[in-house]
Image (cartoon, rainbow, N blue to C red; front, side, top):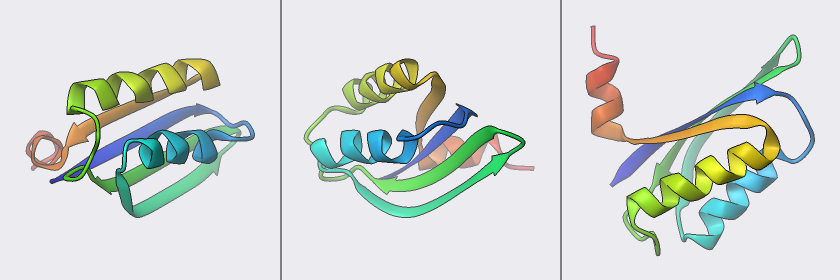
Length: 89
């Protein structure tokens, strides 16, 4: 099962590392990643495979949210099918 992770906030050192560490600890594989910095604002989208995750989806979501709070950024995760449904034209 795949999920979409979005990260948005003021750029700072360690954002990608912190998110990747949470995912690695949960046994979540990063399939694709795109990030950019726009006038000091950090944006990142990730497609991840949560099929082998050691954590339930809600627990993983909470850990990512807590990590975002520590970093001063917003981190959200959604199942890919929900993300696609919300962004369908």
